[in-house]
Length: 129
Image (cartoon, rainbow, N blue to C red):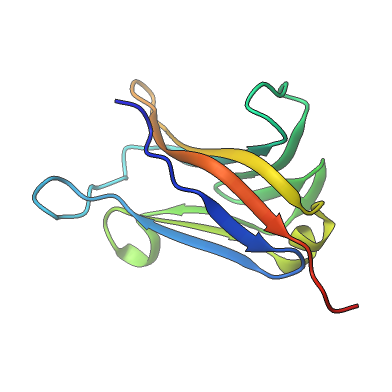
């Protein structure tokens, strides 16, 4: 099954947080303990090379155009089964160029990775100077 499309918006210079909940058809949270980590990549286009990432996030790390920031992706966040929490610090978001990009979030598993969602990622420029 293809990953669901979810377009995301963020503000340049503001801390970014995203919380997603993965539920079964019965409405209960899906246990993510068997996944080794989550990865989010933001690129200029869907055809970008592996070296053309604008933003990359995994369990405990954030990179904006090659510069390390703080944040990460937490699975079963806060002890809530099925919750995926993405966080990027405000300084990293300030260093990311404003624009429209493409992203994908994948949960890594030894045998069956899961593409959680994908879509457009719009970073709106800050107005205050």
